[in-house]
Amino acid sequence: MSQKTAYVAFSTDLYHTGHVNIINHAAKYGSVVVGILTDEAIATYKRPPILSTEERKQIVENFKNVDRVVLQTTLNYTQNLRELKPDYVVHGDDWRTGIQQKVRARVIEVLAEWGGELIEVPYTSGTLSSDKLSHAFNATLNTPEIRLGKLKKLLQLKPYVRAIDTSNGLTGLIAEHTHVTDPDTSAVKEFDAMWISSLCDSSFKGKPDIELVEMTSRIQTINEIMEVTTKPIILDGDTGGKIEHFSYHVKTLERMGVSAVIIEDKTGLKQNSLFGTDAVQELDEPESFALKIQAGKQAQATRDFMVIARLESLIAGKDVDDALMRAKIYVKAGADAVMIHSKEKHGKDIFEFMTKFREYSSTIPIVVVPTTYNQFTEDELHAAGANIIIHANHLLRSAYPAMVKTAESILSTGSSLQASKEFCMPIKEVLTFI
Image 1 (cartoon, one colour):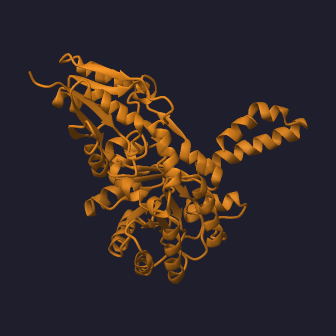
Image 2 (cartoon, one colour):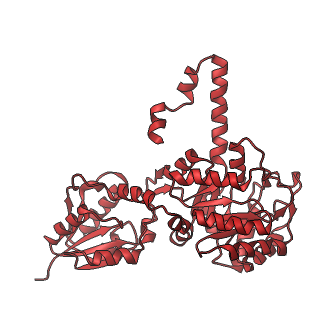
Image 3 (tube, one colour):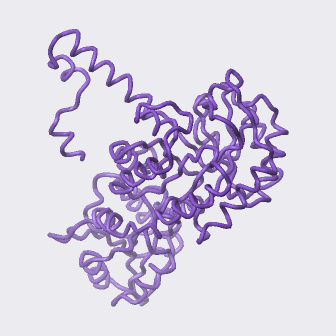
């Protein structure tokens, strides 16, 4: 009679006594097979672990009572269970509610196909969950070196990266912690990265968006956000300034742990791109801008930092072919990605550019900022070729009218009572959130 098997799945790189307890319990039922969720699988519902799939696999292979380790490529157990047909699946009883409730139900359904059984072990008392441990360790281990490489890693693991504007510690916390659960798949959707926009940074400082806020001040903003967050940062670098200055900026940003800087191929006094041709939008010579990209790439010390070229052809009234011509020059100069920008609401020029650029390169990431053409979903933009999707100024734009309404209410009523009821969260919630 062949030995029975018990299947256990792990998705963490922070193992504790609870995991050991699960393995030891599974060993009572037969040979223990552990499924290690791949980085790609974990990235579908929470942040990827610090250690790679192979590193985590090697660790578990050396655990006592583990007879075999396999990879599990999805949160759903179905494929592995049907291939292995274990007699038992052993799991803690902490997945009966929350994100993994549907996963549990599916495991029971699949096991029934051959008479398998789910064994649930009471959660180890006094032990923090892996998610809580990961959160604590992410903050502790959030060194510049680790943070720097997160964007490139996410681009490899996820279909696309979703970013939102952050301009201070508070908006950074919103970007860090806000999430929703997909009712159909139980997957958690959250923002993958933070976009530090010059428009938003300037606006929160009460200044116009004309590159008036100097780099020293912007670095202070970055530091404030980094102190309370762990997600990768993409910086809006405007034009990048003079070539000689841009080289030093790259060194500083890389040393801080910023993952990428996006610079635009315009020259002269900055005018916000969404003004389009209503303002003077003077494009830099592509060869001159390419030299700036080269200087930035030569200045960086690691392979993780990204210099992204922002194409302003469509903003300046040029056509898609002009943007494509420039994109090719910038990629040859070393740009790690290209960002195509437009103020048009129809989005046809954006889709045309992505189609043509994908004929030129299937691997260079494309960044889009669907501020004006936001009728398209992230999935639709990704299907057309986008790899990074930035919601560039929505926290700023939602905060301003809410604060104005509060101020007007206080002036109108001579009291903050009505404003507190209609527009304000309780102060206790503020203290808890921070």
